[in-house]
Image 1 (cartoon, rainbow, N blue to C red):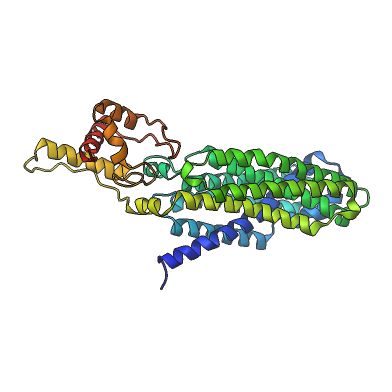
Image 2: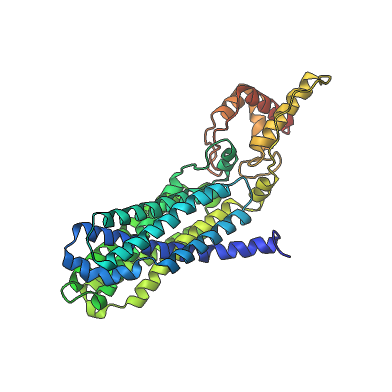
Length: 408
């Protein structure tokens, strides 16, 4: 039985990238196609809606798509929950992120059926807009949850704070997904317009889809760079930068191919362009996956796995220990509960070895207490230390413990 063994965890981590790529590429086309369909439903002419209906109908979800996307989402959550140690976003958080996704896909399935019926109704665009909103909310929650996995210094705070901790990195990844989804959708509309749209709408489909695709392909690189510059230093590596560079080159090639397809429709080649879009989604997924593996390396994983909540001492009618021993025990309890996930005395973990930094405060213990109370990023090689939810008594105790415990 391999459940919970290193081989099982390695298998889960190898399954995670392709599952993420398939899930988000497919979900992006569904969300993008629904966005174009609703926009035409509200702003387009009846002739334009009829001309693009076959294309948008292909992008719309059906019962099979809803079931398969739900299964891939469940597989992704299993990989995340089983492959990475606590503390992490709980199953309740991931379930709350998955619920609006399924509800949104069901609404978009209903919207697709209403479009097929061809009867205009004020409720039809509302159904589509509600479905798109729920899918995007779910994607935003998933990106924020994934952002916590590349910021291990924030994970000890999850027990004391709401599960959703917003970050610039998670927000940037969500905006990247939105750009890639709309760019891929635009390419599909432009490339399939010649085959499925009526003669009078082929040019409209080509211009609309091509314009959307090129616009959002050009909007994606700044968001990618913004996400990378908001990664912790421990998550960055040469591989991360190489994958990002490969994604930028792919986006540039796609823009040139789409511009050529718009200028000379008779020379367009849909297969290579759509394959490059899948490659672009794969680059987006693999960049995030490698950054997560870098942030949660062996030392960090060991620290997170060793983190065991220490219960607060319960007063008992016993002979009191000497004051120094009581203070040391209290400081040690605070350290093991709130600090040990990121720090060791002798070795580098998420933060620097304490034996190298704490002795600097021996002549100024007040400065150490002030730093614990309101941390300030000082070493660019390590992520910023979060503000811990400690009382003044706990700060005093843990500072005294650190000064006593650290090597001279």
